Image (cartoon, rainbow, N blue to C red; front, side, top):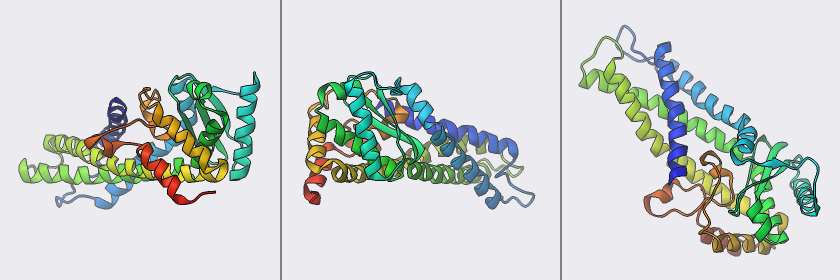
Length: 295
């Protein structure tokens, strides 16, 4: 749950900072006739909403390396590292993408992730725990899954969705704030204290609801990455990797909150928290592969 809280808190903080900035710029304030400049407000909400999302995308590799302590393999130091680099190179060629940076990050939890701003400038990383306990075929399947994310353009698509969500959260929150300011606080002289407070609360509530949409897409892209892995490394190997992950579900996921959506293993949530899961249950992913008829 802490990773979900951190994810939501980070996104809301961006929205709140952008909201204050918009207020200082006078965007979304009422004009002399008491109306709102909806066009101007939507444009600036889009600039801030998409701007923050794309800045995060362009910094994603740097943040991933810093947040996980990942060590990029510049020159392989042993046979295992050489095998890993060669395997990723082969998979990248099969998927018709540029060679990603390959890294290993310190974590006993079995996990891996991919990130980067485009399919020819990406990073794929695997945890030490996965390399130690998973078979070569299982690791290969996991790397194929991450290559699938890159080839599918999932990082860019998720960024676009987050940008749209941020835009409309800010936009509708300010409309709600203006309504509360005028109707409840009877303020006709421009945005006042009621507008600021109502806007902040609206952004928090709408941000939580909007995150459900983003998480739903995140879960759907896992099925597509699993399908890509089945084609690149074999369905049997991918199913074996997922079953191995399921057997180790008691090991805490140690990726930073902002990276959880990009890992192969997002942890297990139940009840209402399941709406905020970045990954579908492993049982569903395994069942999807078994019924898809991959060869």
